[in-house]
Structure formats: structure tokens, C-alpha cells
Amino acid sequence: MLVRHVLEACAVIYAVSVLLELLRTKRVARFLLDLLVLVAVAVLALLVSASGTGIVSLGTGSSPTLTVVIMFGGILSGIVARHIFYLSKAFSWLDLLKPLCISPIVLLPLMGSVQGMKELEAIQVVSFALLAFQNGFFWEVILERAKPQA
Image (cartoon, rainbow, N blue to C red):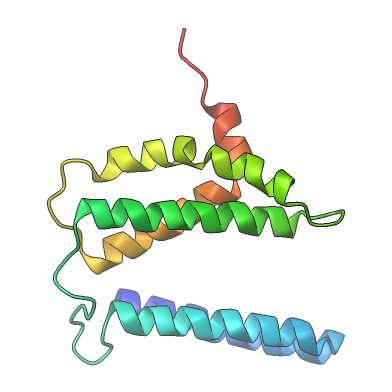
């Protein structure tokens, strides 16, 4: 089974579940937000591969330096998303600035993954960017578990 078929099946299942949730809860704003996520994933899928030919459409590859910059942007986006997601009081730039300052520490393990590679394919860059976003979102857990070995 091709990866494309798995992604298409997941997108259809997600769309059906979003529609069922709309019918059940009648929350239109939530539906539109979920629909926006589905459209973003579809656009990303179209950018990564052409469905008819399977040819990668973002070029032949990118340098590790560009990939590190993209990963850093993913980490920053993840930290901002976590801050907004768990926001329980009024927004404060100072509270957001603290985790943004540790973002290079979260980037270090990911940089080790791309060292020594001359070129990365587009799907690898996208995967590293998503992993970086996840690491940024869970930055507290990553730093708690990063302990020196005795």
C-alpha cells in the first residue's frame, strides 16, 4: 500500500469525524478550525508530492543549514503554540520569552540528526520540521528527561 493511500484514508476519516462532531455538538467555530487544519494538511501533501506522478515537487534537496533554520522555526512555533494552548491567564510576552530563550537547547538533539548529510529530500525536511514543532510543544518534558548519565 502506498503512503499516499494511507494519508488519503486518514484525511477522509478525519473529515468524517469533524463532520460528525459538528452534527453532534453544533459548534461551528470548532468545525471551521478543524476544517482549516485539514486544508493545511492537504496543501502540505500537495507540496510534498504530486499525486499523479509521485515526483517530489519541492526540488531535489536542501542543505542541512536550511533544514536547521526550518527546524528552529518549527521549535519556535511549537513553543508559541504550547504557550497559547495552556494559557490560563492574560497573555504575557515575558512568560513566552522564557521558553523561547531555551529553544536552542531543544534544537541541539535535532541538529545531530542532520549533521553529515549533504542534501535532504523534501519529505525529510518536512518530517524534521514536524518533529521540531513537537519538540517545541513539549519542551518542558524534553528538558526534564535530559539528565546527565552517572
